[in-house]
Image 1: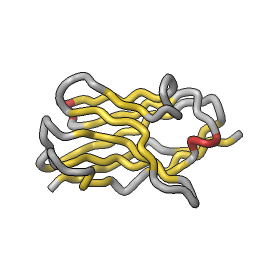
Image 2 (image 1 turned 90 degrees about the vertical axis):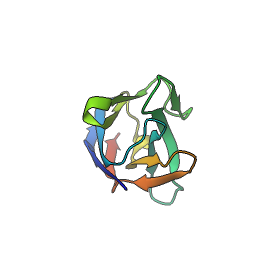
Image 3 (image 1 turned 135 degrees about the vertical axis):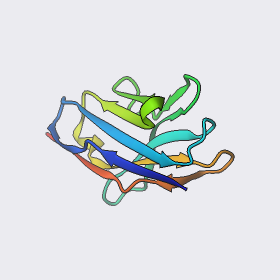
Image 4 (image 1 turned 90 degrees about the horizontal axis):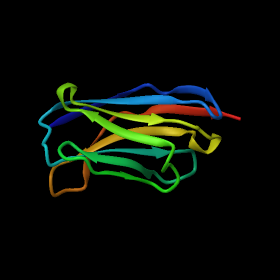
Length: 118
């Protein structure tokens, strides 16, 4: 079992920045991916960014490339999402997720609200 707890959401003006954190506890694996997803009202949940616990590869949705950066601190079992140049369309509940190796994302956090005002 893995537990994920997000923090760092809030209200910010367009053009501003926020950093989300996701603290993982339990049986994490170096082969697992850690990812951020988001969901806004009336829309399906969408992928934002991902990183593996081991290695340096990162992955981003086109809509956030160049503005968001995902990183991890293995010593703290924490993954971060640095969000810069925020836009109103980034407003959503942001979820952290991880997977059992070889499976789809099967552990999710409770979500943290990000609201970007224009």
